[in-house]
Length: 188
Image (cartoon, rainbow, N blue to C red; front, side, top):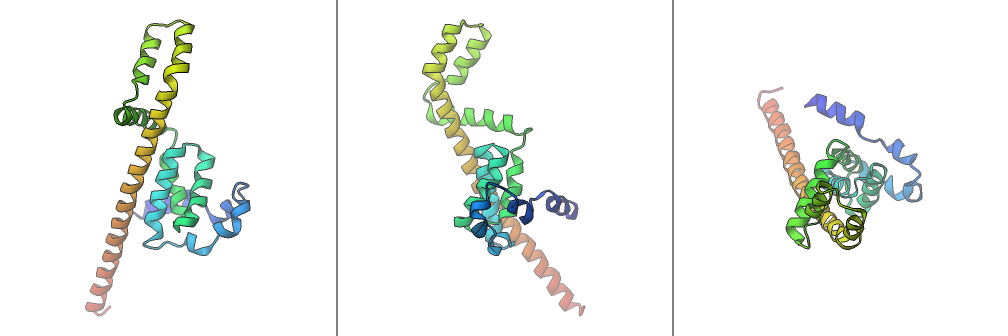
């Protein structure tokens, strides 16, 4: 576990890197409040949830971290943890997230089967007029379904991440307290 913690500390953005960001300069005074950079039992799960929500929904690397930093203000979330959680949506995971969002969006909204018709156009080598018809009539609904699926996935992952982080925090604190009580009981 210590190797993971060391790796996470190396990868997590520092306060200095945020201060150099041109996106955050207008909000620097509020974003760099010390409470947003402390690791507490409330701020860490909030940071995890916010990082997953923004990281999965936005999928634009530079905007993700700035979005987490700005949204951390009203939610009093830990900025370094939130920024680190945005790295879960990396180029290797993005295609799976996008395919999942299309599937979830089509399953929930059921507006049309935009992806099915899209694949049918590819397989049949459809003429340009059929593609134009698809782009103007069916693609907007398919895009809406994809965005809805992305929102559902990001909200679901944020909720799951919040509870996992809160449980991990409680477990970690209980382990530390048990060690302290054993050390006190043994006289050390």
